[in-house]
Amino acid sequence: MGKLKLYDVNTPREIIVEERDAVYLSRTSEQRFFLVLQLNYISVTMNGGQAIKISARQGACNS
Image (cartoon, rainbow, N blue to C red; front, side):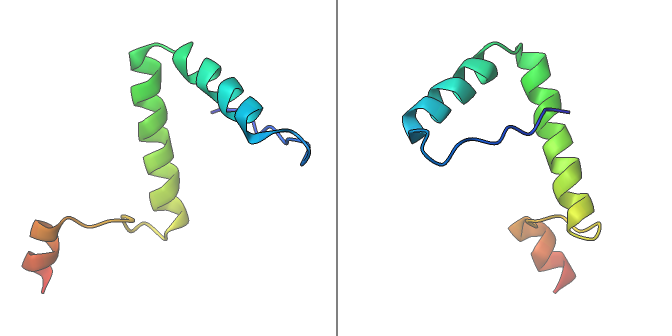
């Protein structure tokens, strides 16, 4: 998992975006893919085991 970085409130948003872009672009496509899976797992866990968004097809079946 990544590290939490706290920024000074006086840091311009552009600097933060450039820094985050550089970190993102330095990763391989495989690393990016697995980071997305990790984020998805965390969001489901924090939402009590329920997906944040349910597809329209899945929602229609449950109605």
